[in-house]
Image 1: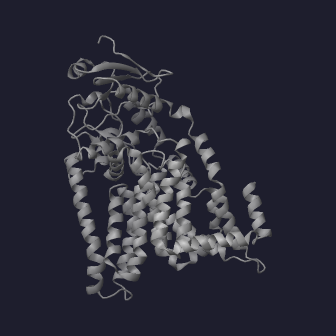
Image 2 (image 1 turned 135 degrees about the vertical axis):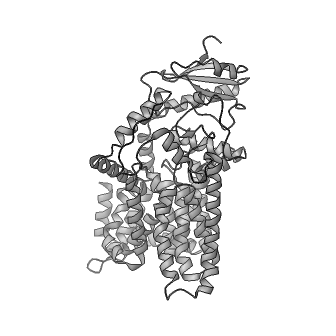
Image 3 (image 1 turned 135 degrees about the horizontal axis):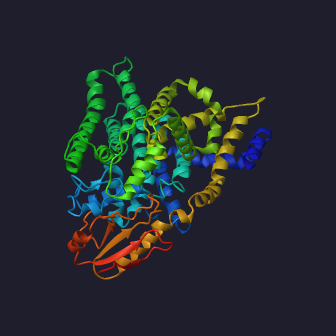
Length: 540
C-alpha cells in the first residue's frame, strides 16, 4: 500500500520535493564522475554498513553442508596445500560434499575457499566473505561505468549493495555468489572498453574475470562467457576493428595468456585433488556420492549404497524425490528456482522499472546483454540443481539491463509532465526506505530454531577449545535426525586438530577409531537432544 501511494504521488505530483532531490542528485553526480573515488566509496560502504549491523546480524555460524566444505578448502589452503592426504579412519569422518579419496578435500571449485582462506589468515573466514562482497559491489559499479554514464553506474552499484551486501545469505554465510558475480562483472565491464580502446589492461581484466568464473562456477561461467566471446570474435574480424597486427597483441594475446594460465591451474588443481588432470573434484563427488542425472533430460541413475543412514536418507530419498526426471518435476523446480533468483536479485520494487522492457529490447546497445541473459538462463534451467548463487555471474547483466530500463523510464512524459522522473525517484527512494523492512524480513525468514543446532555445535567447539588436552567427539544421531543438520566436519589436518568429529555408525566397531586416538579425551554428543551437550563416552 505504501508503494502504491508513492506511485500515485509520482503520477499526481512528479516534481514533489524536486529542489531537495535535485540537490542530492547533483551531489551524487559529483562523486560518480570521479570514477576511482566512486569505486572505493561503494566498496568501503559495503564493509562499513555490514559491520555496523553486527549487533543485529552477528558473524554467522556455518549451518549448511556446503559452507563446511568451503571452510575445509579454506583451512587446506592456509596450510599451504591444495588437498590433504586421505585419513586411515576416513570412514568415521565421511561427510557431505567432501572427498575422502584419493585425497581429503572439498569437492567444490577453489575460488570461494581461497577467499575464505584470506579471511582466515586475517582472523576469521567471514572477513573474506565481507571483502568479497565489497569487491563485487565495486566490480559491478566498474562494469556499469563502461556501459553507462557515471551517475547511473553509481546508482546501480548502490542498489547492488542494498540487495546483496546487507541481509542476503551471500554476506551472511560462507557459500554465497560474490566471487562469481565479480568475475561476471569483470568480463562484462571489459567488453565495451576493449571495443572502444583496445587496451591490453582491459583484455587482462576480461581474462581475470573468466578465470574467476572458471574457479567458482565453471559451467555457468562458460555459458556466461560464450556470447561475449562470440561478440568479440565478430568484432575482431569485422571492418570496425583495428588491423589484426594492432588488435592481436593488444586484445587477443593478453586474454589468451590469462586463459592459458587458468587452464594450467585448473588442470593442476584437479591433479592434486582427484589425481586426474581432466576430472573436476565436483564431478568426482557427484559420481561417488550422488550418482544422479545432472541435466534435465537425462534418465535417473541407480541409487548407491552407503555406510551410514544419513547418506542414504539424503542421497537416496531427499534428493531423488526432489529431482525426479520428469517434465512436471523440472517445471516445478525451475519455477521455484527462478522465483528465488528474482526475489534475491530484484524483488517487486526494482522490477517496476521493467515496464520499459519493450524499449530496452529494441535498444541495439542492449542486444549482447539480452542474448547473454537468455543463453545463461537456458543454461541454468538445463541443470537439475538451481540455487540463487548459481546465477551469480548474471548479477552484472541483470543490473545493466535494470539501469537501462531506468534510463528509459526517466524520459517518460505524460501531457508534458515529467512522469518518468517522478517514478524513477520513487523507485530509488522506496528501495532506500525498504532497508529496515528487509532487515525485519531477514530475521523472520531465518528463525533461530533453524540454526539452533549449528549454534549448539559452535558452543561445544568453544567449550572444547577452552579445555585442556585433545578431544574426540563422537556424534550419535537419533532415527528422526534431520540430515541437513550435520555435525561431522573436520579441519584440514585432522590428526593435529584439537577437536576431531566422528560419526557413530551402526554395526561398525568403534575400537579402531578409539585406539587410533587413544591419547584424546573421548566425548559422546547426542546431536538430536533438545539441548545437545558433551558427556564422557561410555567405557572410556
